[in-house]
Image 1 (tube, each protein chain N blue to C red):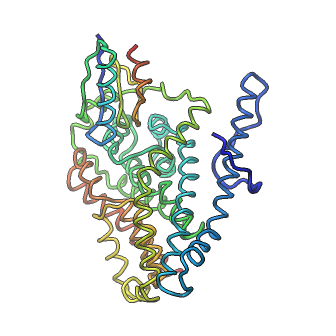
Image 2 (cartoon, one colour):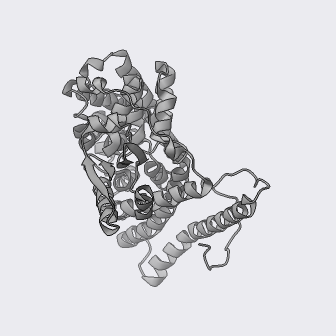
Image 3 (cartoon, helix red, strand yellow):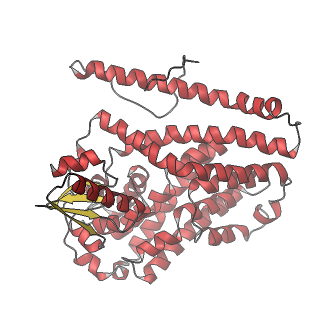
Length: 368
Length: 77
């Protein structure tokens, strides 16, 4: 599907899309060369489009719609027209890349890696694998059972369950697009830390007694390995499939979130949030976490709003804590997990993760 | 007579998978019995880690996504 347009620029390949060794000398070589070539063309088109957004948004705001500079409306419109295409483009690239990477990490494989691992190392691996293993909250229960019955320690399983939803590609793409790579890296790093630490604590507490007893009565089933043999074509299909599915689902939230963010950006006075979500307000971090835990929104809807708040005087730690609790812990997931966890364990789980997020929030408000 | 099971707790993708499997069976007048499994214990016992998943005669063919009609036809053909 090479585009008909001429190449605008030859980019120093941005992160993502492909990374294959040089073609091997066999019949697959021309195919592979073609694959790499079309990948490069698409990447170049992507890069050209990405570079073109800022001038285009500027043109549309101030020439096409003759809005006066410095007006509230112009600020909001320019923000919207710039951020929406930028975030969507980033989302496509990151989701595609992660989709391809994830085709290497099936849940079955992750389980094989984690089964029988010692606790500390297991917690670390589980947090990291949570990022690259395909996960949706409707699979949380089968995965929990599959892990636990295969001999993955309870705490290690929890590390996975915390990191999988919290550190996800949509959140990272949006953070990267709206806040820059430093905040994205900070979020990923602290998210992994919270997942590691809360899983480790739950493991120390020996809470197996609070898992519904029928779970341990299920005989361990060996996962089927049929999905493991994939060609590069299959993996690229997995990437485009992920783009269709995830970006297709998430784009209205991105638009809505950025629209609200644009409104805040244009009309809310600077420093408006300082009193409520600023560093001085010590109570703002726990409040942000308490409000965030039951809230259910995906990263796509919440991050643009949060970014706008940050511009109006909210503190980064408070904002990070709010984001983590909204994305990482949600009421629907708790309701699903209730099928396998007794209420006491659910509450302990939410409290420990909430506490970890709290620490992250205070830490950043203190340091930055 | 093939025994097809669609595993899923009731998310949108699971419904879609079940619908698609039933459609393929009906259109091809295939000799297959389609069953939806939403019990977690049964899922775990079958070795299903991510949903939706499809098994044919006890063998898990696919998990974690919605299959295409062609895929389903290939499993049942």
